[in-house]
Length: 99
Image (cartoon, rainbow, N blue to C red; front, side):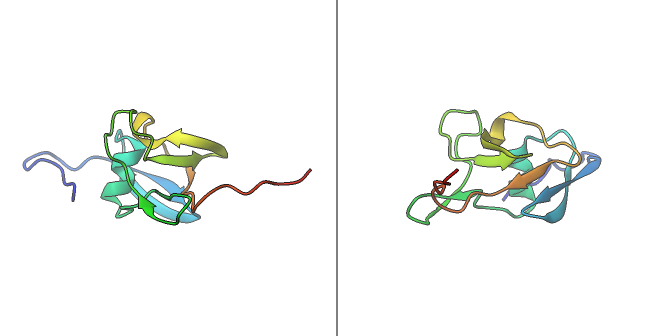
């Protein structure tokens, strides 16, 4: 789906964790683009279980919401992929936890 322009040198990579799996992504990419390049075409599932993917890539549509380092509802298109980042791809609606 996405590929670098022809003739550009390969970008250095960083390792991050997606649902516990180590993934090497190009340094400097937004998290949304890094996930797409790594083969994660759906970044979350909505309340009906339907796959959702980054759409606008500029922070307007909210289709790229993920959990990053424990913080929910992070727009993956607005943050850069960083080494050691722990990403969780939401699967449906959140559950209500009793305290």
